[in-house]
Length: 183
Image (cartoon, rainbow, N blue to C red; front, top):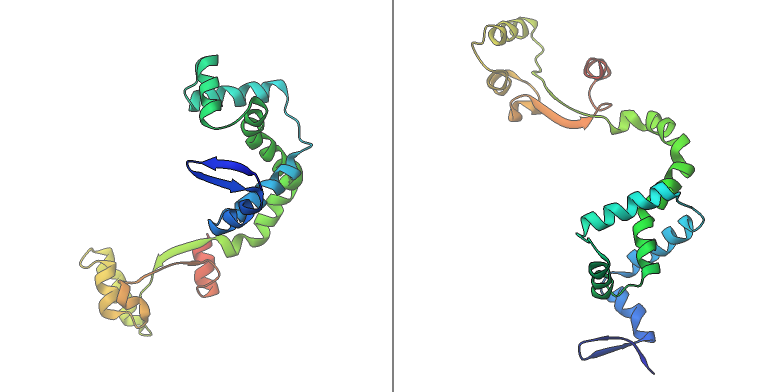
């Protein structure tokens, strides 16, 4: 059995590669990348997209000439074909997403928006309207802070947090409070 990879003194055979990928938790990443490669296989890039992608790559990796490029390829164990795949991958993936889901994203977002929106709000809960009015005037006149009054007078769990509630889904508070927060 011949080795396909040598790392220092260790020789890794073909039959050892998959168990090693699994052992190091890299097998799911490999599977993900293979699926992505299959999905973007037929996506093409126009010359402007190619040039922009190469320019970004050169800039991000501080490559200014052919010698530096050859050195980068050697250090990363790649050939120019593999490099082209790497450079164009993100553009192809973005184009695939646009072609596949662009017309569906907004409608899906609008369907689940209420589940995604989170709010943080402050509340003092009391059954006594007289106390509620008194607290309102104290806050308005800056006699006390909202948090101080919430700790002292609120009749719910929010008294522990100075009246602060959240972040919670917009659908969690009472519907009337939810409508006010939504507005």
